[in-house]
Image (cartoon, rainbow, N blue to C red; front, side):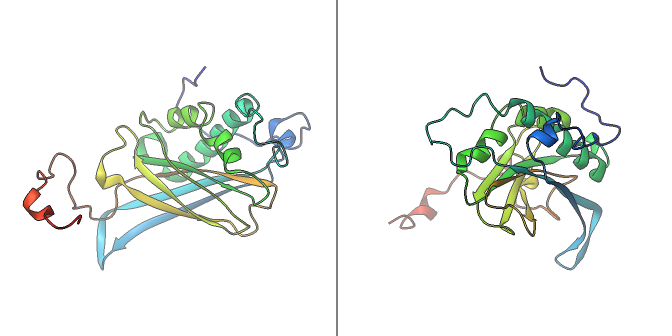
Length: 222
């Protein structure tokens, strides 16, 4: 069942002191949030400040060393849902609430001992993605990126407009780097959002694009 209330009044509290909690059982080591306020671009002040933020959880990878044909569908349901709440709450607190969010994205950085599929087991299930979309007040498919790497690996998480996903002005990227993470046996799970478009968007969209001029294409693809 998806959550009904998309508005969080305060970030969910961590329960790592309880050995039976999901936080303790899944080895959540850190949760980090970073916010960027864009005031100007290209030498000109933006009409209104644009806020971008990401929230990330560093969790132990429980599948390290497991065979590659093992089913990953069932095991992460509860922790994926829990992580969607922890990360979305922190994004909403950073950006000013669900109504302020215009674009969103998600991502994962898998430590070198893990598989790419281990990150997908958390990010690409309804327990994380659908809950995250609901908490952030969106309806579109969430943009995503993932990679595998060592501690300090950089991942640029793409964002899209949260209702249609295809409003070109909202295409933007949020750069995530965490010194010391992921360790070889960890996964960094990321949620990201923005309160606006790119600064000064002016490349148009599908409603303003002109039909392709076939004459201009002559020789281009040869």
